[in-house]
Length: 98
Image (tube, rainbow, N blue to C red; front, side, top):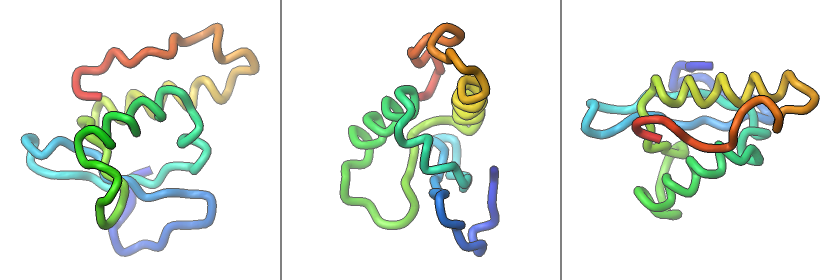
């Protein structure tokens, strides 16, 4: 869910900024905290640590194009709708920028 920067984040959700600096900036999204425990999202968090480090100010920044982030988000949501999610989608990132 893309959100206006002025809106408050609801309990159980996290604000993230997605984008690549060379693409001209970041877009803000709200994601459920449950994403933090998903193996694909954990890999993106590891990449964020490599790029930005642990000590940053403001929302969590993810070094990923908006299109690739939306694809990742779709995959996580699709898996959460299946009882045996590990049989449907591989746990690898095949995105250009993630």
